[in-house]
Amino acid sequence: MATTQPAATDSEPQEPSYAPTDRTVPTRARERAAYDHALVHAILDESYVCHLGFVRDGAPVVLPTLYGRVDDRLYVHGSTGSRPARMAGAADDGRAEPGLPVCLTVTHVDGLVLARSAFHHSINYRSVVVHGTAHQVTDPKEKSTALDAIMDHIVPGRAADSRRANAKELAATAVLRLDLREVSAKTRTGGPNDEPEDMDLPYWSGVVPLRKGYDTLIPSADLAPGIEVPGYLSGL
Amino acid sequence: MATTQPAATDSEPQEPSYAPTDRTVPTRARERAAYDHALVHAILDESYVCHLGFVRDGAPVVLPTLYGRVDDRLYVHGSTGSRPARMAGAADDGRAEPGLPVCLTVTHVDGLVLARSAFHHSINYRSVVVHGTAHQVTDPKEKSTALDAIMDHIVPGRAADSRRANAKELAATAVLRLDLREVSAKTRTGGPNDEPEDMDLPYWSGVVPLRKGYDTLIPSADLAPGIEVPGYLSGL
Image (cartoon, rainbow over all chains, first blue to last red; front, side, top):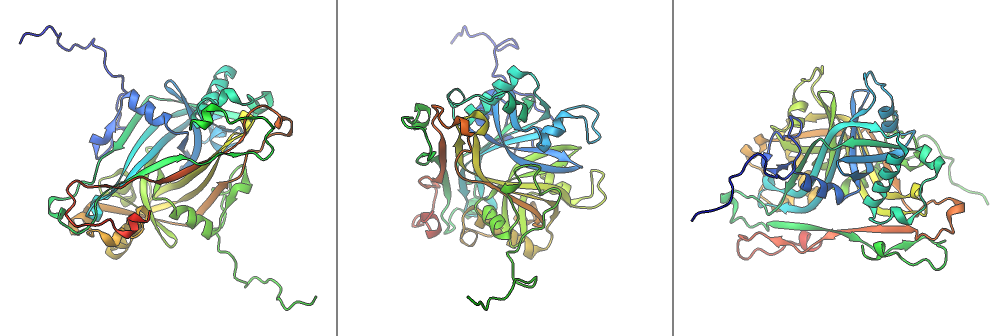
């Protein structure tokens, strides 16, 4: 049958994706790695706690930290006195330029994969690993946008329904920006991959899916009278 | 009233705890830090996925990894071809001694802390950060114990109810050991700490507790007939 569909060309719109680098191509299980923006953003937007790694005196440090995303930028915040904030702000530690080399990792655990053999046990997960240099945000408008994004990662809609930071609080808060450039996602889904000769072994095998959710809200004891639970919380 | 209780002496049994170091005393919020074995072990034993940080070519790398605990030792495993395994096994990268300097972090998020002010938003969490040098486990007995511990962290009781690794599988699996020496826990609990002048603002404030659990088991499609769900799974 004749077709009028044009042949694929380089100018055809493609799924935008991050260019793989030496650091973002895994040494093994390469079929689990992905680079498209949509998947990376979806994994990042489903959480608000990342693990931020940096090097201090030659040794690694990994700290759990809140983050937010705006387009292709991630933001983390902390006290201006915190170690990563101070390290990102100054060219200390023998480094020639300001900015702090970091690795920012976000992981969702979706299920336990129980194989017949110990060897094939695994976890269903979705993770994103971002490599890059974190820089202090000094522009007040960008800082404000970043803080809103961090709030709205915790609970969408919350930034607009709270008192914005005042000048003193803003001065006490450091915001670091990390551009999404060197990024990869990694996912595992599905059941166990047992060896053919193990299929008849007398062990239960399958997946235990993890469930995440929210428990009953605990209002502050001193909540002013007449304040209802807002829709963005009752709908969680 | 007279008492026969002896005065406290240095020889009295004390809650065992890890000695704080420069790396395990936080620069701020020191009241959230703790060092006692019981709390550290409890936080570690409630999870099975850590974030393992190491330095590669001078830059940080943070990867989600399964782990297990046996007394004061943590174990992580991976393919013998994985980057951390290879780096821990050889004195490469300009380092004089074998072993890989790592930072291993485990985090539980327990609740969202919604304050009236953006500034006082927070997360209730429990985390453990371990600094040290990871070494390859070469002793077959220790390797086997470590792999059982990793399995039993995922689901207690599972190691004994699966086919143990055979010689070929053991040879393909690298196990790294990290001693619990330089360790701290950090926890936040309770409601928001709003400023006195913010208490009457018209924003809902309180804690959204997170709930974690398991969904209905998904047995493998090719499960041999007559295999019941074991007690350690039905009781999850």
